Amino acid sequence: MTRELYTARLNIIQGIREFFSNREYLEVHTPLMAEYCIPESTIPLFHTRQYHPWEDGTNLQLLPSPEYYMKQLLASGWGDMFQISGSFRNGETGGSIHLREFTMLEYYAVHTDYMGSMGITQDFIRYLLTLPGTAPPVRERWKNIPFRRISMQEAFLQHAAVDLEGILTPGSQPHPADREALFHICREKDLKPETTDSWEVLFNRIFLNLVEPELCRDPSPVFLYNYPAKLSSLSRLTADGLWNERWELYWQGVELANCFSEENNQENIEAFFRNEIREIELRNREAQQDGGDFNPPTRADREFSRKIAGLPPCSGTAMGVDRLLMILLGKNSIRDVVPFS
Image (cartoon, rainbow, N blue to C red; front, side, top):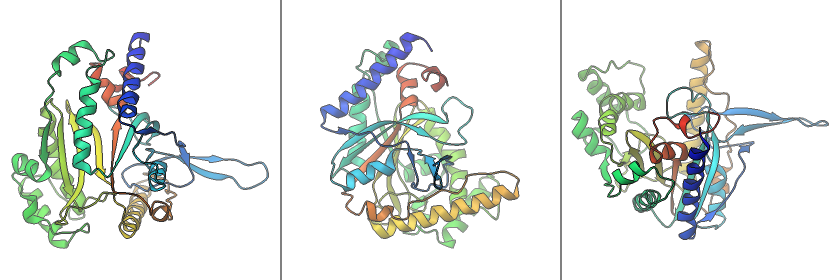
């Protein structure tokens, strides 16, 4: 990585700060390690241990995002905030868009739902495209940048000829009929489903093989919104109970950002924790049977729902800064924009 490229990186990161500071978001800095965290079965963690000379040591985890601490600040009444933070995810190896240590931008907008945060994110990207650090060819190509919005229902209809609304039951817990319907669809489309596949595995067979590749063909930014409620997450549900109030942003075929209308119901948060802990334990047992190790036991904060009991209605967006820089600087790999990667 050249000095000039690193300077461009710094200029864009400064632009990120300017955008949110100009909108009166508070920049915060929270710890990178924690004794406890939010369990996520799909994200293996790095574990470490703090040693004490005269007492038992403390097990710690490197956090995969700043969400754990930022939500506690939000619940304390800190208002709109953002953070540019180092983040860590185990198992992120190889490829042009994955690193075990990377930079995350996370921003929370109080009294703004996921649709409102779409508009904020569009303004944010348009602003970054005006900065001197952005590569001139990129700035010229996207000076009148179009943003496309498509729901998961529309995407499945267009690219897989599957009517999700017709086979989903309300609520976050899969019904046997939901799984059976997806299983038959996967078999009809020769996606080789297995009898042991869960509802989520079957859904991803369709999404990852038939839907996402088509979305990634469009180089323009695409917001994919309203994910099925059966996909476990800390997001609120739509009024009909079928969908998570969630979107993901793809740009030039890269999954760039993820946003929720944040769940603040204590019972729903606790149910999410139980489900994720159960899934982590299941995956660990399966990995150990295969002679591997998927994810060391996560030390989940079982008091988290109490700690964020005052969480106001808000939306939270997590964006990969290195992936964003890769696009803005006209590179093909995040390793081109991250020193020592």
